[in-house]
Image (tube, helix red, strand yellow):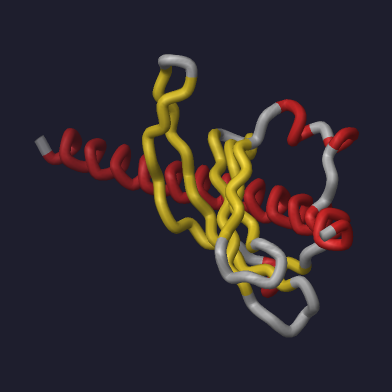
Amino acid sequence: MTSFTDLFWLFGLAAIVASWYRLTRAREVAVRAAVALCKRHGLQLLDQSVGLRAIRWQGVDGARRLERCYAFEVSEDGQSRQSARLWMAGNEVASFSLPLSGAPELETVVATDSVLHTGNIISLADRRRLH
């Protein structure tokens, strides 16, 4: 009986370590995605960090998938701090929210193939210059 209990606790500990490792790797992917988004949109990623804020089940094409929300702070000019969010499904960006020019509100963009391939995308910095 003792060996079964020890085996149970060993598997439980292994599951906790595996979950922690998986979440750590997912956070590293989110940091790289946040850096790429900030670079693409002319923003600075402050503190070079993201934090897990939420987990949700999202329906996509009739199937449900688990998405993680990471929050981070960005700046347009290096002095102001504004909130931004990044939703990840696996290792892919599902959607993101970046601050509007001159306003604290967030502008949400759902990631699609056209967003991921930046050939026909106007960056937020270019859009701000046009308006």
